[in-house]
Length: 115
Image 1: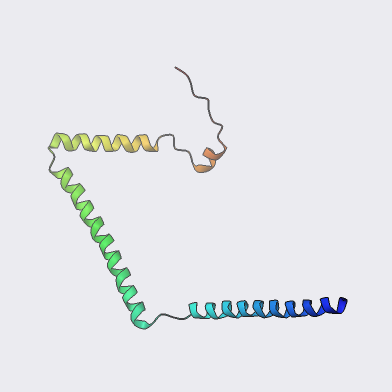
Image 2: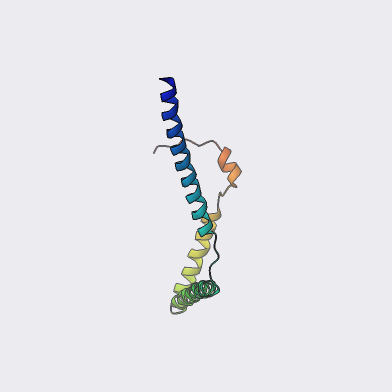
């Protein structure tokens, strides 16, 4: 009886070892396929594409800046003065009471006052 169980277990373990080995071999082969280099033409095309994308970004930023300056220049002198003053005030308000991040981290939260 014990001998019979041993024979069955030996067959099962051989099959499972073969399956594990096969799976391991397939994984190794698949990793080898991913490690191949791209051809020179593919790399050149990719480089050309990246360069064109960067140029598009640069052109967009130039056009945006030109548009903003044009919007400012077509305003009357009084309006330009108001725009300039509001920009200064916004910058002053944005930078007012700005603590560095360590102080903000350890600062106790103040309770809000009710009106």
